[in-house]
Length: 342
Image (cartoon, rainbow, N blue to C red; front, side, top):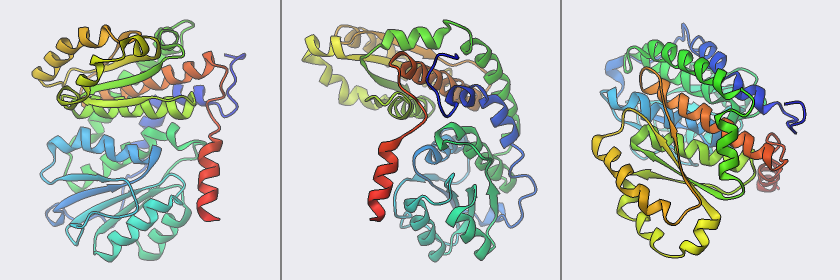
């Protein structure tokens, strides 16, 4: 990969995801000050961008097994229901994400029990001042490359509170599958390269079934945006079957040249969701450049979700490479942040 433009080392960071996930499982060990299981009435995860993926993963993987609701909030405000029975996970890689800081302050004022996950920053300072539990995150150049580092400690925190027993086994199974998939993806002319070339300069629209597929599809959309600096969109099945599918009835002469459907499939789809994927295939195939599937393997929902994530990450990186784009720098986002404080 010596001839690929990659000044930040995004390819190496993607390839290191198995090790990142494994080491992240220890970041929240022996964390003091967590609430008791019976004192938690709901869980709220605050975060934006790459850090916000922690909440999406918690909701998709742990949410179905938890005895209390889990809500992901991405913005400046904490949900109105937040109170003394709320376990609030505030996630910001830098610790300086303004939306997350403001929402966390609102949660504190409402009496929530807060756990901070950050490298430091203002959120780290808040945790120190208020004596909140703080999970220090490792030094990774780009938050989007730290998807394992932000999400796995959150799952372990829930395990320690008694809300998601068995989290560490889920993590171990995920690491095993990630290692297998990584070995495949780093091969010359591997499946990620071929899929990136199939997409070419078309605009990918990612579809995923149920919570796991929806998160994987959204992650891929964001990675194409940031890594390949290209437009991409995502939607969930079955929801798209109630609206978006109607939109493919027109303009096929344009969309066949411009768009590729990338479907993220896994073993935990509801049977009717799987049926919907079958029924919509031909509808899409008539009006897009191609319909391609990214398929998960591995033991358990976390393993399959991370399997989809690492595949999508590599595809987005190879899309950047094929276009001669440096995947690391994101000057538009930096300029936008700077403009907000002017």
